[in-house]
Length: 135
Image 1 (cartoon, rainbow, N blue to C red):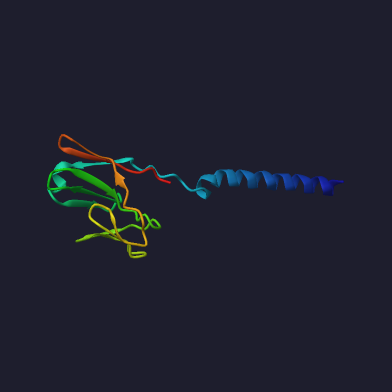
Image 2: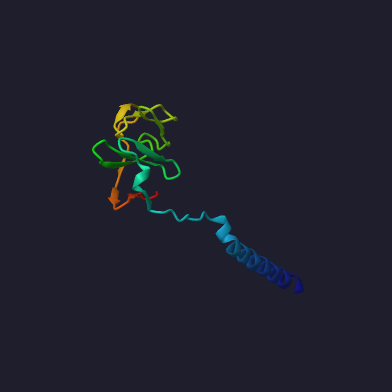
């Protein structure tokens, strides 16, 4: 009788240690949710009159028209989500070749929708852009 009891005890010890090990390693085995800022704030002087400021680290561009109006665009291609790059004539998707005008409108596909416009506010000497929710 010593054999089966010893085997059962050994099994339960091994099972308990395995479960404890998995629980202890759980945070290393699951992805972490990074804390991403929900808005970007920058000095208003950084966006030139009639020009643009590309912020690739945030995936957006802020433009100021000749009339002083501000606009912020998300640099995510509306076709399959690649990051578009700024060119002299607007934006180009390096993945599939979509081209967008400086205002985000589609010039050539395969994208069929314009770049997403973001909420952009100018208060005093600061510009704040609200970023889209992460999915």
